[in-house]
Image 1: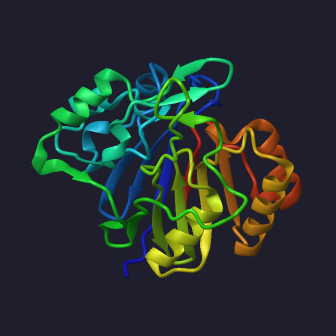
Image 2: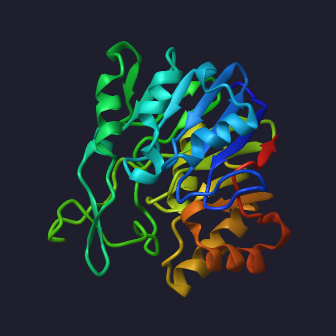
Amino acid sequence: MRMNGVTITVLSDNRAAYGLEAEHGLSFWIETTGRKILFDTGRGDALPRNVDALGIDVGAADDVVLSHGHYDHTGNVGWAFDRARHATLHTHPEALRTRYSIHEAPKPIGMPDAAREAVRAWPEARHRWVTEPQELAPGVWMSGPVPRETAFEDTGGPFYLDAAGTEQDLIPDDLSLGVQTQAGLVVCLGCCHAGVVNTLRHLTRVAGEPRVLAVVGGMHLQHASPERLEQTAEALKEYAVPYLYPGHCTGNEAVAFLGRRLGPSVQACYAGMKIGF
């Protein structure tokens, strides 16, 4: 298996460095050995503005990977389509579903119509439907659908496939990405609706690498119970993850909790952050 160097630049997140824009969205620019990957496309105008400010050439992307079909990860698929003309798109078929979050009232949270059109317009020869684990490049793995094995993890919210809330959305399209390095896997999460512990269990099996060097991205712990937070922290402690960069939908309280439990290994993500291994 190839051992890769990897650099991750956060393009879109709920926090941002001075001079960049924050939004409720997520996008990473991942550069690894011989590969440039746009992982998710944020929500709105913050992503393209941050890309310009950071001097990222999205047109050089080899791959565009969509972690799942929610609006805050797919808002700029059309923008990416116009720029990354030679890139291959990777997503799960379920990402195109109509979806809702229901708290006090139904809120559509699926992929925007323009993004769906861009996905469907992507040339068939450069479009891969991810329905199982796939090695994107030597030592670079897409998880595919993640088995839900833990008793304490769930999708992280009241998610449904209909506005009446009669059909629960288990978000089967949720996927993450792992890059093999000399010191272990660097794992990139979208929202991790499958649960971060389920995801780490799955990706370490798929990659044949039990060590996890870093976890970067959204963990959807904003509404997590104290019990779930405790068990998540304990599992991450067992993996002995040296670098943990929670962001986006993890939630400020959950980030603070993980920091108290896991110490200086925890640092919150923000747009403009550049992480290299």
